Image 1 (cartoon, rainbow, N blue to C red):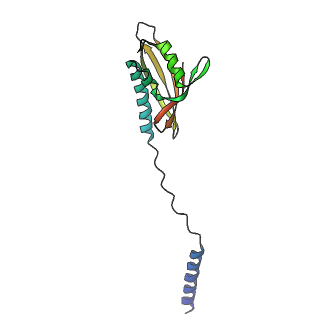
Image 2: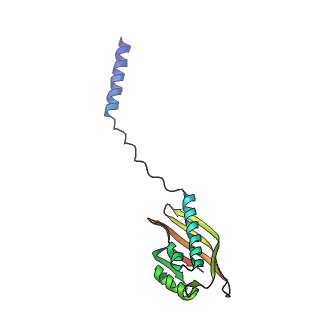
Image 3: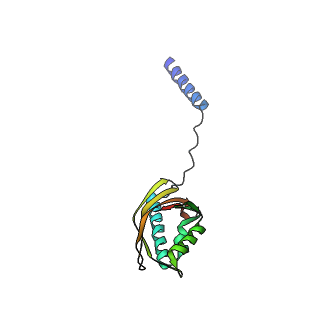
Length: 158
C-alpha cells in the first residue's frame, strides 16, 4: 500500500511539474528557400552572354541592361557613376552609326557567390574585327539580386 501511495504521489508531482513548466516556443514559420546557387550562377552567366549578343547586334541599351542605373564603372580617372555616362562613353569609343566597331565576346568567365543576394564574376573580354587591332582585357563585375533580377553594381575592366 505504501508503494502504491508513493507511485501516486510521484505521478502527481510529475504532472504538477509538467503543468508549471514553460510551454515550448511554437515552431518557427518556414523560411522560404533561397534559389539554388546553380540557378543564380546560370542567370548571371546568361545575362553576360545576352549582353555580348546585344552588343554584337548593335543594341547598346540591351548590352547595358545588365547594369543597375546607379552602377559605377572604374576608369583610369577613377569611378564613373551611372549607366548613362557609360552609354555615352561606349557610343563615342566603340560604336559608329549605331553599330559596334568590333565584335565582343567573353571567355574564362567565373562566377562566385558572395552572399544570398551578391555575386562576383570575372572573365576575359575580346573585341575583334572591324579592321581594327584586337582589344582584350580582364573584367570584374559585382552583382546584386534586385527585384527584377541580377544587376551589375560595379564594373572594373582593364
